Image 1 (cartoon, one colour):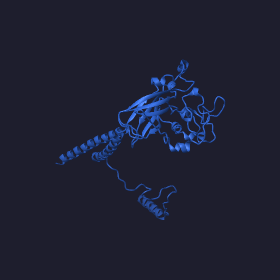
Image 2: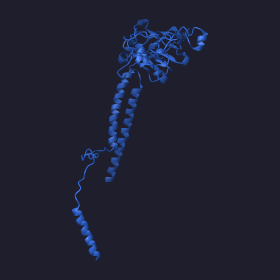
Image 3: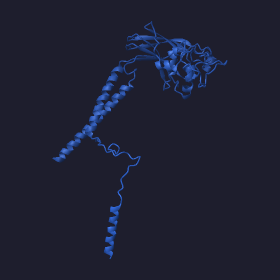
Image 4: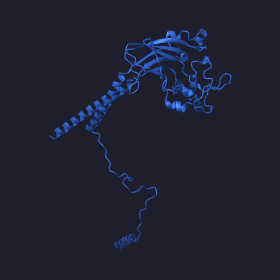
Length: 345
């Protein structure tokens, strides 16, 4: 009876299975299609970083880095930079503060400064164009409050939106245009160049970014710009309109570091080797209260920018590292293959 009941149960289960309706598989709305791409079934290859393969890649990179580094080095080594700090020169310091009280407060009420001259020696020839820069040290033009204190709308010649926090009006209540400490602290030293006693024209056209003159600055006359000499440094905009003074446009583009250079102009004549370059300076900009420094820099540039050995050194170092890595990897590959040959024998 027990065997019979088991057989009957099995027959009943089989009959129910044969009479059960077929259920077709349905794909959900968010299920990806049944393709090799969607199901990630495409053939793939995974390169094995064997010592031999790594050595070949490293030697290829070494050739590239060493080649680029050598090309940059050849270009940079022919460049020349001569500089001279002038704010601490006795002839520049003497008379900057007319009275002892002004010297103690580090402020000049007249604000006229001094006129002095410094001499730079060019031991190597400097090919034209020769660029003249001023360099400021310990001047944090990148400070958050300094960078933000300007009105972009007013600079473009539109109605002021009240974005400036300082130097918005004079003591009498007249509007200062453009406002803000960035415009108010505009660098106002000037330079004249003589090469071996001969005066050379300093061309200051084309020193600013064209986009700054076209899109950031507008064509309008400045108003009440640095009329208070007691707050100098800081000079007036020398152009007839704001976008006409390229020195101002250069000043308004703030650098990233506390020591920076800004372009004054260029000389379109070559400077021979062993030449004395005399720079006559109207020293008006007051950097003494915050222990700043002012330097005049004369240099030329090449295909990869100005004189800076950091770029070729980095390329040559990376190339040397890749070369050493390739030697090590290829040596490991050679020793591994030799060991396997000994085992087979």
